[in-house]
Amino acid sequence: MGVTGPIRVVVAKPGLDGHDRGAKVIARALRDAGMEVIYTGLHQTPEQIVDTAIQEDADAIGLSILSGAHNTLFAKVIELLKAREAEDIKVFGGGIIPEDDIAPLKELGVAELFTPGATTTEIVTWVNANVRQAAQA
Image 1 (cartoon, rainbow, N blue to C red):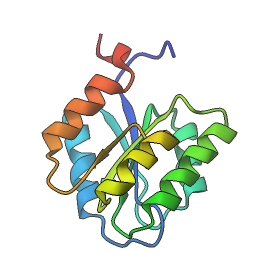
Image 2: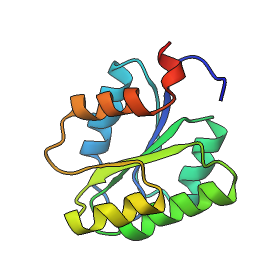
Image 3: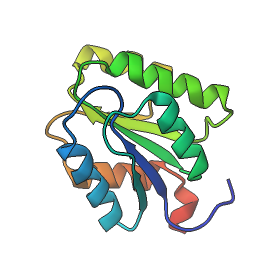
Image 4: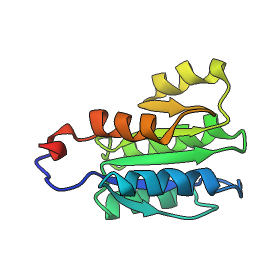
């Protein structure tokens, strides 16, 4: 990538899920850890999320999904990133994701998934260790 500066993360709430407290907590934790965070707000389409990530030159997209539509929404974001030749943008996420769905989502290209009980420290540590490590130098 060759980009320097803070890690840039788009935090998004795709679909019709109206619960955004968790996304806001994660956005604040990432921001407090020195990252640049773009929070897209509620009811974003996968197209809007990918457009924002590309426009903002994001290093990662963090999706928060509580609606049960995680298989469809994660897959669509990954598909759109590939179509836009932006596969270097890592996708991670969290929410109510059954254990049986985690491995298939990772096979699709989701870098990491955090389920209920994950701490903000765990998420910040993972982002720092796995997203654009050169930014930390």
